[in-house]
Image 1 (cartoon, one colour):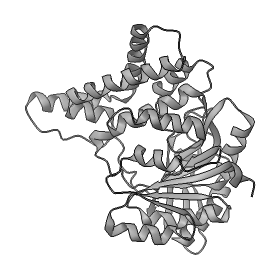
Image 2 (image 1 turned 60 degrees about the vertical axis):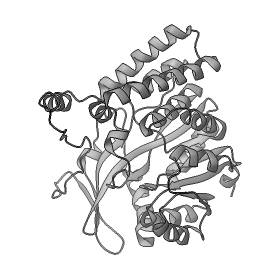
Image 3 (image 1 turned 120 degrees about the horizontal axis):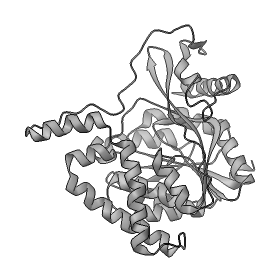
Length: 360
């Protein structure tokens, strides 16, 4: 199919074979070309390979391989002009891929496109679709620094999206100039939007499972990193800021001299930190630190507990057994001018979920 001449799906995975079978079945039914880049532990790697080898090209990496090192090697093997990075703890829907790809083909000034990311959990045989995770609008300012500001002021990762190949490779290379999982991700996203616009198309591209990251919270959340080791946080930030400033300057993305550029970037990231630094958690942690206690902090994104359905929730029977439960807070998510999930979109997602869960 023509899509295969344009798009390659890359799934970077580690220790999650249970999520792959359903996802690969969805991609196979859509006729997509898929590459699985696996760095699982030895006792799990065979299971990942067995699940993947009939439906995807398979690349193997050592378990200690860093995420962006793995991406750099895998993406370098891809020849199509567009790449979809698909997460191994999200369900990615082909209909939204098609919509995002169509958008990129019609808008040459955009380097990436992503739909909404919605969270779900399972309860017995019910699929509880219970929260909207990523939804912020397209970043479409003509000025690269302004695009970066709009990314940071309401930061939501677009790391698993459709990307044009060359900007993707450049962003990966830039991420590898810094250390720390969080700053590598933020650098990746920063380098991306500095190169071009980033679209949010009005489809659900991912349902995210309730599985937690394998990384420590203090390695991926700016507030928790700062609270556990402020010296390390600021040391990594300065390296990140300086590398980002060089990237901007070397690529002629701003007219500011280096001192003013660094100052502007500091202000932009202060906006980001203010958005992420929960005042209640910060005060609670400070009191513990003043008393010489070990930090005991709440998780910033706790699992959504199961609750009985209410009259404004939408409930549909699943094929075979169980239900799809669409919570009111998802279907009527705020801000309403940014998020719109139609009944047709709900039906499209459910049809693909039937395929996903029938294969698991």
